Length: 110
Image 1 (tube, helix red, strand yellow):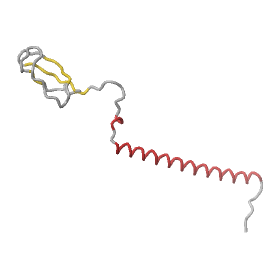
Image 2 (cartoon, one colour):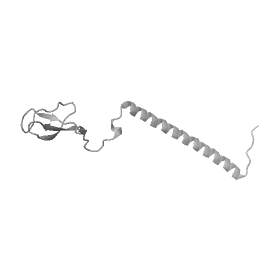
Image 3 (cartoon, helix red, strand yellow):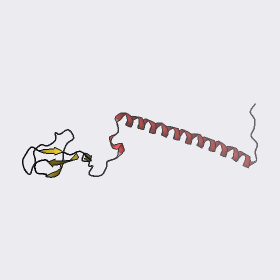
Image 4 (cartoon, helix red, strand yellow):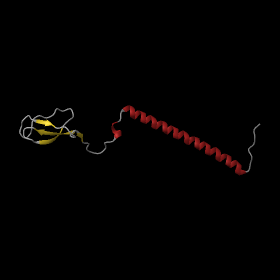
């Protein structure tokens, strides 16, 4: 909740008050009990986050989360495809090098 500064025009009392943004400003001074309290302009409308775990990604929309999940899945599929292609190339390369090292020549089929 934001913090607001108040000052009483009757007695000069100043105070800070934590209020909901949608709440109406207070009118009655807690010191002199007159309806001369006014909210001051300034940096008083600051929001204070307490505790850990306030991250940018905590409050993402559902559409963003679905899109991110789809991107992650497509990246995993692409990386597994490239690994399988690399594995098949390395196995065919090793087979041809084995045949060369054994000294035999491959026979042609008619």
